[in-house]
Length: 185
Image (cartoon, rainbow, N blue to C red; front, side, top):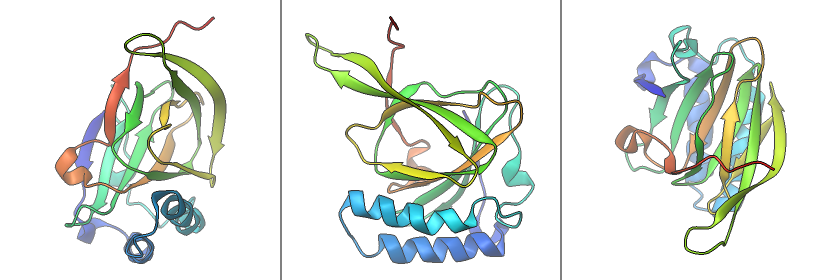
């Protein structure tokens, strides 16, 4: 993954409005499961809007998917990133440092979700669900139980927005752990 950072003043007016909405939701300091649902509901109406992202925030990287950090609150309570996926690009299998709500802005993303089953010292991953997230669709998760792999299996560029309850400007990534590919049987 490559990361670029956009100062909020380089964001669109619609993004400024979204940041304000998300600040209100996150500022309520509700339990993570409820926060994720409310953040996803606030994000959904903006997805697919041509005035949400600047052209630079929609640029991919031919080598790997690209993360454009759009905003990070100085208190670490909230970060917003646009992830741009060219066809065939994918993440590793990973989990996260915080809750997250995501929505597909353009295209579609394929996601495989996993469960870590105790198995001796380390456990083993078992695939539990395959999901296709299409433009306008939102979802969310809270650790633990947030192990997945995301890919663009389509023929065009996919862009998704991710809202995290962590400071990505400081952390650089939302990934807590990376898991080895399980043997599928």
